[in-house]
Length: 407
Image (cartoon, rainbow, N blue to C red; front, side, top):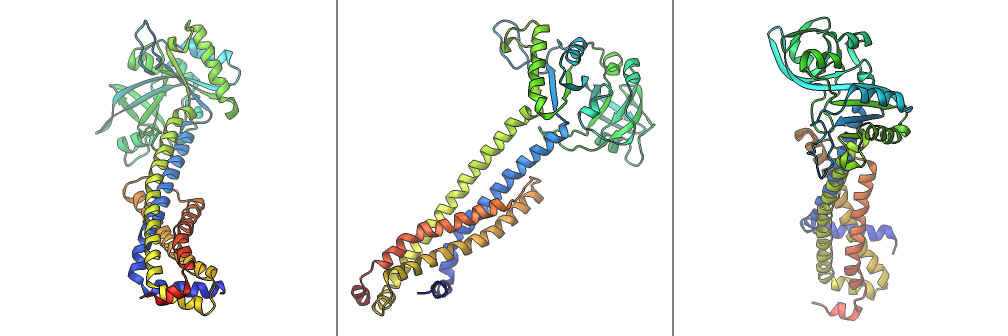
């Protein structure tokens, strides 16, 4: 029997029992929609992490005071909790590591900021004139502070986009004076918006000033919170981090990772945990979605077995007038595949809708790729073949005489 005729018979059998066919498709529809939605959310999470990595800067390495290692004697602290990182360490890194492109000492703290009748509590970050270049941070207005500003500890600053919008909602802050802990700071420019960081923080809720100004006039400290380094190329990031670790261990007389009082991390390392978590969650959700496809496949097998029983006399008549066993097998197999693929197509549409709804209402990134659609549709077809084969084979194996006698 030509495949086209077999397909027509299959479609007629499906239309004859529309409600039953629709309910049979339901498991496949839900399974395919779930697969697409879960892959879209997983892909969106990874794309978001990639974007956040890019927003951190170019080939960036963070050297922080403190370590997560656990020693046996001295009290240990997490990154940023102790004060052993110094300007001399930063200078040693700059002079002794040839693969370093740019370097900025860093000091951090929080402060209450006032401008006119507006005030805000924000993060203060102190760096040198290279800091925004390392972070690949553009200016939307004004200009960066200079090496002279750093040397003289001038009270000048750059505003993050969020701070600028809060303190100066209707005007350009460039050239204005703000008060940080009652000290006047002149605004040199406004930084371009970066959005959320990889840990969900607002990267634009920040004021950047010379690190010497924060050390001497705002925080009263001599140590550094961090040293931010950029390697010359992406391939040199890891070797640079290794060399920085070697130099600091030598300077701090550390003999093993457990004794380190500093932390050296690359942006890729910081994002690796989140990528792994995103992949794990995607696989978990995919497993749940696959259960729906399995249930849908069992439903197809069940309905096709019922269909074989209901159409036993029809099968016997077809075989009595010349239909071969493989024709009957193909007919029922095509019916199962058609049901599965129709459910798959509806599920793809539903998957797109679910992904768009999650992205709109829950603000979760979702990226639907053609590979995800092909994978889900392929699973739907395989489900039809796998779960439709047994009922089709049972139909093909019926004895024509016994089938004609069936009531």
